Amino acid sequence: MARPPKNQTEEKSTGIGASSRLNAILNSKDHKEDHFNFEESVTWKISTGSLLLDAAVGGGITPSLIRLCGPNNEGKTPQALEICRNFLAEIPKSRVVWILAEGRLSKENRERCGLKFVTNAEEWTDGSVFILESNVYDLVINVIKDLVLNNEENIRYCFVIDSMDGLILKRDKETNPVDASKVAGTQVISKKLLQSLSIGMFKHGHLMIAISQITSEIKIDQYAKTAPRGGMFSGGNALLHWADFILEYSITNLSDYILDNPSGKMNDGKSKPIGKYSKVMIQKSTTENTRKTIVQYPIKFGKKPSGVWIEYEILDSLLAWDFIAAKGAWITVDDSLIEELKKVDIEIPKQHQGRDNFRKWLEENPEACKYLFNKLS
Image 1: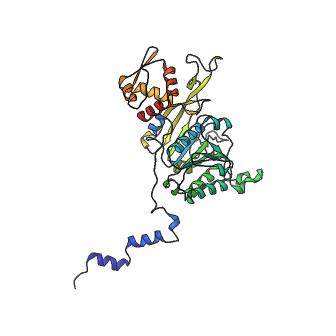
Image 2: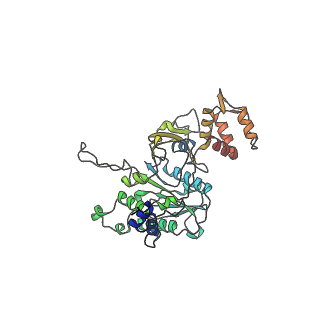
Image 3: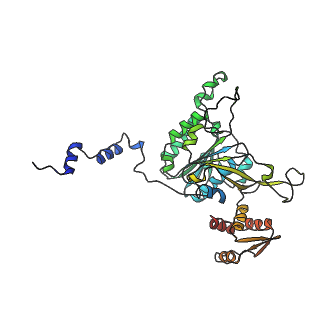
C-alpha cells in the first residue's frame, strides 16, 4: 500500500493544524482581551532635552517605563518635566497625567516649566498636563488602566508618578499605626502596579515616568549582610526589572553650580547660582553598552522654561566639533556654519565676545538654537 503524502499524515494525526488551533484560541472571546498579538505597535522617539543624555541612552526616549531615582533636589523633577514637554510637543494627540502622590511639584515649578497644568478634568485637552492629587494606589491604577484600555480617541499618554514612595493601598490608608508592619510597602505596590499595566501600555505608544527617592536601612549589626533590595532606591526589584531606562542622580558638589559671576565662587557673598551641572549615571537603557555611563548636563534656575540649559550644551558641542573656536576673549564661528545657517534664513555674527555672549545670542534666537540642536543630535 502506498504511503500517504507527509502533509496528509500530519493532518490526520493532529486534526486541525497547530497554527489554526492557536489562532482559534487567540481569537476566542475568552482570551481576546489577554494578549496584543493582533494589535499594531506604536513607536516614536523623543529627546530627553539634553544632547549628552540623548547620546547616552541611544538617541532619545521611546514608549517605555523610565525610572528617575536619587536624593531630593538633584534634577529628577526637572528631567521629568523636560521629557513631558518634548512628549507633548512631538507626539500628536498627546496628554500628560501627573500623579502628585507627595505634593512636591510647587507652583513655582509649574509656572517656570512652560507647560499648561489643570486640575479640572473638563479643562484637560491635548498638549496639557492633568494633575491628579492622590496617593491612593487603587484610584491611580484605575485611572491609568481606563485611559489606556478605553482609548477610542487614540490619545497618547505620559504618566508621571511623583513619587512611588507616596503610593498606598486604600485598605492601608486608615491602618492603625500599631499595625504599620502590615501595610504594603513601595516594593509590593510597584510590583502590583507594573503587573496590572502589562505590555499593552507601551505597545500602544504610551510612556510612564516613575520617580523614586533614596532609601536607607537601619542595621543593628553593622557587619550583617544586606539582602538585595534593588539598590539604594525605593521600588525594589520590580522597578529594576520592568524599567527600560534607569537614571540615577547624584548629590551636587559646590563646584557643579553655574554662577552669574564666572570668576566667583559659591557662597562668596557676591555670586548667585543661576544653574548647575546635574550628574546622572545611566543604570539601564536600551543601549546596554552605556550602562554605568556618567553624564553631566546643565540645568538652569529661575528661567522660563526651566530645565536643561540647552544653550550651554550647544556651545560646548559646537566647540568640540570645531564649528566655533575660542581664541582669547572671542568666539569665532566657522564660515561653513555661517553659510549653512544662511540657507535656512538664520544670520549669525562671525564673532562673539566671550562664551556668555554667544550663549545669550542662542537664547535670543530660538530658531537658531532649535536648528543647531537638531543638527548636533
